[in-house]
Image (cartoon, rainbow, N blue to C red; front, side, top):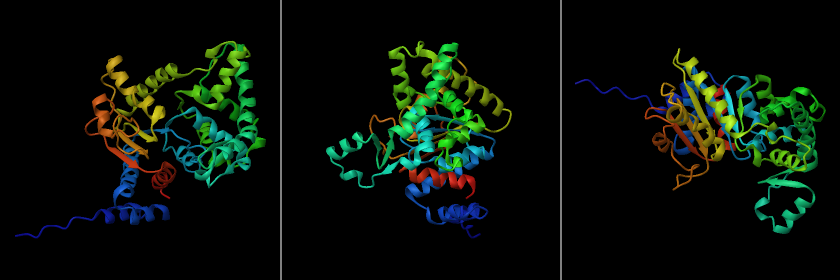
Length: 348
């Protein structure tokens, strides 16, 4: 009777995959073997496999990823063609640029858990808007960008032109009017990287962001005559439907598909993933494939009724993912997890 062939241990497989990569990847391969650590590595390997098969990747950004300076790793992912479209909240769209021009004026509050209501009021009185342990300076960040983009809003309004929120941000970046204010290495700004690639960006619910509020205020005062000068929601969905259909058709000639890498939950994730059931159920485009890869990083644990805490399999019942779609979930802090996954994909 022949002896059974010993199975290759997972850590040996991962070490072999990391052999040609850098020290960060080697560290992950050696130490990340179980639980969320193993899920992180599986997610990264799946991302890499998806791209190697000729796939494209859509990344979604919820939470305060831009203020967390995720651009340090995300910008390089964009430059190296590891990301092909981004869906983000209005906050993430603007806060990367806030940080770009006002980084030196930001303040960290590492003891934020112990702040009293009076402490919070004192921050407000100094026009410092807190995001967990980081305060964004209103004058140097928000008002500076408001002044630059408001010129574009008003000019478009008077010319009868209409643009998406991200297109207005691309306009001010390309104009060069902000360059003199840059306070970080430009290669760490994911918006600058996206602008250079003319990367598609979809921004659902832009109206609830700081700049969205400022735009609404100008509509109330009459400075902007036409509310729809900034294109939003439904138009973003119709644009995404066209992009998905066209991209999927192009990829069908090979083996690739469109993947979905979700950071956080909320509208940034829920809005774009719905494009597939819309194409199938409302437009009858049943030949358009489902998402070919799905991963979510979230600190929302599996729960009842919470979209952010819904496991990937639940999405099968909504026509978003298929039975055989590679699915991954990492229940952890995205500010820790995402840069590590990106490092693996980049071979660092």
